[in-house]
Image (cartoon, rainbow, N blue to C red):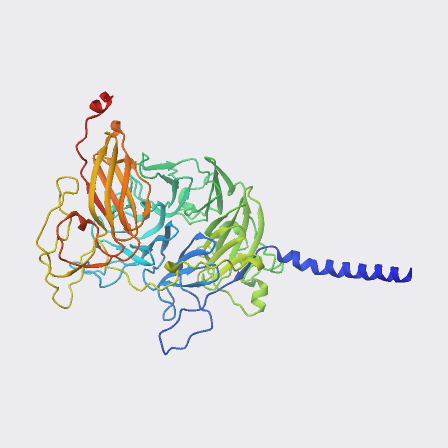
Amino acid sequence: MRAVRLGASALAVLALALAVEAVPAAADVAARWRLEQPLPPKPPPGVPESSVPVGLGRIGDIQFWAPNRGLLITAGNPPTIPPGVWAYDGVGWHELASVCGASDGRIAWTGSDEFWTVSDGRPGQTSESQGNPQLPPLEDNTLCHFAGGQVVGSYAHPAFQSDSYQAMHAAACFDPSDCWFAGDPLEEPQIGAFQLHWNGAALEAEPYAGEGHAVQDMSLLEGVLYEAVRISSGDHVTTPNPEPPAVHRVNPIGVLPTFEPETEVPLYGAGERPEALDFLSLSSADGSLWGAAGPKRSEGGALGQVTVVRRVEGDWSQLVGPEHPLGPILPADLPGEERLLGRKPQESPYSIAATASVAAIAAEPGADTAWLALKPSEGSGVSQSQARAVLVHVSAEGQVLEEQTLPSNAEQEQGVGPKGAATKLTCPAPNDCWLATAQGWLFHLAREGERGLAKDEDPDFAGLITYRPPDQGLPQVPADAPPPDTSGLVEESPDYGSVFAETKAPPIESTLTAPLLSDLHSRVIGGRTLELRFHLAVKARVRLLAKRRKKLVASTPMRTLTAGNRKLLLRLNPRAWPTKLSLQTHALAPLPAISAQGSAGGPEHASTGTNSVATGLIVLPHVPTFAESERRP
């Protein structure tokens, strides 16, 4: 009996010990924010590598395609960190491109291995400032197109012209052939917001006419692109509106109208002027669109207040705002009598969260919650680079679930000092978010056992990209040496006059890049189906579009085809017969070099160059009229 009682006591002690051990284990299940800064890139040969992390410089954007495939764009931190693009592979961040960096750039994914960046221009690339004593602006007014592990296109426009590219603050894509880039108002006397549209073949200027409010953010939700604008008292408009829409809808190709105002967003309180509220930072996940804006001093001196709205199933609701103020922030890891930076409540710019500025919002997948990043308000006297980052976890009902300051007290006790106010925020998965600070430091929200993911082994995101091609749309700087004699080369596709009619020209005694497309033939089957046959030199993405004037009436999906003889079938509607066919091609591998003993002027030269993006216009074959086709048995 005694032995049994001793055994029972031992089991009780063991159970108690297990219970004690279970407490921290249960606590560790919760996701926590922690500093996770990458090391600087590998220096040139002969220079010792650094084992100490440094700030990456101003990070303009962080975007993820998957939890283990992310990108950020930075202005750099010379001389250690060059301007460029960094990639996350599930294990850590590494430098992906030492080109196409930006002062405040943006990233837009078009697919798992293709994306665009809003980047800075390059001084000296062109003579665009000739005739003007001013240097051309360079910040955030060019575009880079990445695919296949390289920059396949760079786009810019001469400065000081009515159609010059303006600084761009927002970018998003429906798919590889439908992307939007937007930013500052147009140059006067034009009225509208500057916008560029990539239609899969070319960039077209399509401004939001009539309202000169700067476009600041974009987010895609359920096949519609939402863009947020900053409303200022000095904006030029065609028709004055006491409460101009702070959000626009942009529809995909083929849906008209292209732009629609979103007029039902509940933002303002009684007597609050639209100019007193900054633009909405947008984020979408799981069928909902979140927006958050902070106060902005208007002409009358009045300030707005932190406002959070949410769109679900077509309806907007205000979660935080005039009727639901966010209230004071009392971070859990700071003594109750203190606020950020160790100041007393009455001395702290954060003591009333409602008057702080909004840096970003990130909807959290898998939960009806979002993280809200706050920063010191204008005129607070607090340096953005010396402040601590402030985060608030908000529910779909507007409740504050959690407040967090970074670095945490625990990290500060370990010697981690302030890394700057929050600037960018994103959540690629549940309990998985990333925050960038004003100094270019990264904090990661994750469960302790889930901070490392399966490593992304895609080679397109592993190497270092160092080459950016010349900007399309700009006159190029004359070379130091005379150019080679290319007088026999045809630089533009001729007007064939029929469906890819081939012409012959004398052979050129040189080596050329093989054409991506060759041997193109088309025919109409049964009066309704267009068949296009062609040969691909390398693996490529291909898509065929049919337009009736400017409206898209039919298209094939964007397909990835291997090299060889291929064909596309496009079903046409006789009641909406197209007036133009456009073939989009995008090489996914370097084009081989060939001897130039072939023709120089045939249609196969419609798409040349490594990883080129080109469009060949197809003249419609002769087909019966609709009435004739309807009379067929």
